[in-house]
Image (cartoon, rainbow, N blue to C red):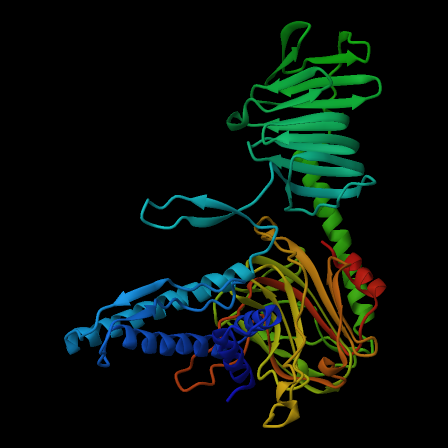
Length: 573
């Protein structure tokens, strides 16, 4: 019997006996969460128990007297409390045999369905990330409410050019949803698209307070707003002055001298508590001084960067960053610690091969592209591979034995719609082989199998399979389509696994002696998926990534935090 199943059976027997403690409950959770065969065994175990209880309750054996029977309910080891039914009086005598048999069969089938559904929901609850907000969708009075994943924010960051964030401001990336609150820029430009449809270009130094999808307060900075008819009513405020757009394009410059409002096209309305509302049309401007005075100002649209000009600067920035990455990539292809390097930079159709670019070259490490299609990468002039269908993958064969490891890649996640979403998975997951993937909860997962492949009876039977190192949830739906740099180091000397996101440490754990593998290996593996259909019916686990990968590196060493940060800085789009 498999070690996990044997351990699960022992724990369930302790549960039935009422002797299982909190540690045992947690162990059951972990086994059921990680082992599909253990989950199947658990359902069968509950079915057998239910059948025995229902067999007794249905009166299939003769009874001579009335005796109390406890109504059975499925034991729930994932809950901290055990439920028990109230005594029920069952009259002596027997029901017709055929009816009793059908009742038992129907009850067991229904119990199986409930147990399977409960187990699925319970495991999903275990992996729901803390930063996902759930909304309730009504589905009718007789149907349980459905929980819908929601996001938070009032606007999106759609361009960042030559930008430095102000001190104390959390760094945002292109594609991030911006929540209400402070937004401060030290220098450079940010394009912000409010959910109402207004687009605002902010030039630093600037400080704003986003209040809603239709309103922001400006403390400092130069802004240019483009407001189409669908977004009419969008407003910016400065102190006690409110500028309400009526379908237009206007600029605002807020400095210690006051606020300058200029209309480049259309019409805005100035609202102030102590004066009559004033409308400005194309070519008109008003300067409000710090003393509260209002004066006519000259309109200078060339002083406010527009969307087309910012787009051109963004393309220029992308070209410069691509050239910088290319230089860094060419230099690091000769790093002796590299096991395999796939920069995804082949011109043409790639001929369904993913070239390994380590120097000296080794064509045996080239990957075979299966299904995955070529798409634009971090820059328009660079390629990536998109993984969408269950069969999409890149097959690699990496021989040799290693010790410490580092995995690093650029990935764009469209959705985490599998329980396990592969980055890099070895086929057989034998002793010393790594698995690197993302859970549907948005957690980065890394492990190296620890138990021997041919483990039989003996003291090693209780040896854990591996040490799962899970990061806190880092991904949420609002990040869909963003390029992220992920890296994980497995440091044998320090006995430590560390996850990184965009050049910054995300999570680290120490590996106990009994879970540390000093010799690692890879062999046959897949990028963006897992395993081959080796079963007779050609079934295979569906763990394909729903997204794209652009650049993938494997090192036979644990890179330092400084090296991971350098890799990110030279590769960020």
